Image (cartoon, rainbow, N blue to C red; front, side):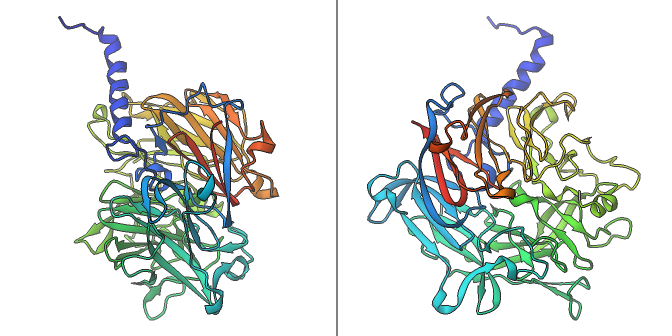
Length: 544
């Protein structure tokens, strides 16, 4: 006998079941039940969720049971998200769960992820790209442009979050250095067991494309390792490492760049310039990596020139771009969305490029369509269909599925997705949860819940831990102290009700101090621990 479900209840139950299956299918593991955080915001879709967390729950994450359990000093500021691999066999040191962290002093560290006792008080390995004897050092902040840029201080080394190929055991990372007065950027491929360079690396990054834009010469625009800032995280898909650039502040002239390198040999496959006949178009995204669907790459550009409509130009400033690879060696813009008021947004410096793109799950209730979300400085949430992004319409944003103006006061970060809700961390605003209605293919414009805490610049990028679609916790690093030098604050909220704060690191400030605040800080949650990077410090939180 089959138990029937009343018709009026079947749709909500079906949607809930679909969400549960999708959440589990997107778990950051390898099918073995073990968590691997190998890329920015946990997966190439940039959804920011770990749904294999069975230890931390809303019941035990509180100041009495949860807090900082140890920390490690590192040699520079940590703007990157910590990455996590279980069961790494380190030569002569046994098997460890490992947390990896990269610094602006051009160093990458591997630490035991679970404790700092005995030999684990020291790094399992450290690789530094600094060589004072050879005149190689991180780029001093004052040397990157003549405007005194304070975007990243006091030095620039590694800003973009690395990416790990867990199967090959390789960590890919981009460094910037000043070498006897010249700026150089390199792509490294490090062995996750030892930190040793692999694949014949590192390789010096360079590129050139046809164009008459800013700083061009002879009809060619060349990559400038001085001006271009590699602050977006790296993407690994389809056997290629994708890397994106913006600039140091608005250090004109500059261009947005995307390059792809073969993950097997570090050979450059393709290079694309966002404004080859103009200027600007940086891929900023507040440190967020481009999103990927396994083939194409999605990202937002900020500032600069847009002329793709109506003249069919090649400049894509202030846009959301879908970049494809033609014949395995040439980039092409397969689709894009540019706000109808992009000129006004650009003039006011409130274009969408400050927020990372999030690809939502392909719901059967939506006939498998790939939807995507992007936010920005204006505070508008744009919901797009990846197959029909909307391009540009000067009369209005008629091609988008939905726009929610002033959903936030402004976003310098990336939303997170879990269990049918989008979590958005605003600047000069609260943390908000927007519920998605699969039946209408829209988000509800009024937040389902929001935090009582208001965040200042630069605002948080939320991450979520959960056991499937249960025990959801939203984790954020409050980095208001970036402006005044005070510590970061780690906060945890009940994902089903953001008015309920479970924990924050000020409740036992002496024990739980996270270290000096930095921009772009994103927590990593894995196997009952929370990993937090700061000024010269990696802190590890867990049950006590």
